[in-house]
Image (cartoon, rainbow, N blue to C red; front, top):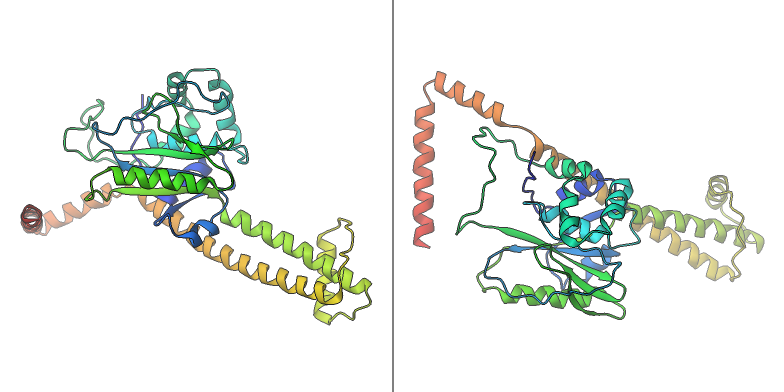
Length: 356
């Protein structure tokens, strides 16, 4: 049976993976600074955080819940290398605002009556999820054994956990733990409570440890921008109709816009009961919102095109090209010299690291 590969903690990778398993209207953003309120505000609503850290078997003892809300979906990580995908799914399955798609709906309905360990086992049988995950496997030139490669002492091993809001409480969901970890209750902003827990988690490790990544699972910014444009166009339509009703002479541009929007939207709505000045202010505000949303759309389209190109490179098999390059170098008598240069360079690099 094909195993699960390791995947990069990259927002482009995670966003494509989410889309591939049938979830729409969701993307992933990397958070570089939890105190960057501007970035946090720009990507709202945030459905959950994924926290990546270097795992050790000497980690702190966590206090897990044995009894918790039966609606909270928690699964143990049973499948090796699946912690990234499982962290994503932990957020998706505990957020009712998200349309999770058929594959995740079927998995949740089937696994809901199972215990956390069996839920984790069951995940391995969902072909759509496994295929999406393994689509990011790196091509290997040689396969010597089907045995799982186990981490040795000193190897870098990383782990993903999730932070989510659920019914007025913030939880940490870690598939390697026995149950959910209650972070605490919140009133208005769950992110404040999650931020405290994440920063505390980082401070627990040694000061020299910098191998952390924080990702936010949030509403797709293109989806949000299109919503703003649609709402603002509706505001413009109603404002122009209301101005016309008040007897205000519309400009030719406004008349054309009124005609165009009236043809696009056939919904009858009540006119806005405001003064001329208030309606004109509403018009300008709606136009500004549309301009800002268009800027966001352009930025996101560029970013998603970059994601597409980077993911294509990740998945592309460069091995035949590299082997052909070696053959050409060998035919020209250059391979031995290239190997000597590479070995010398590697030795110098090792010596520099030893001095540090």
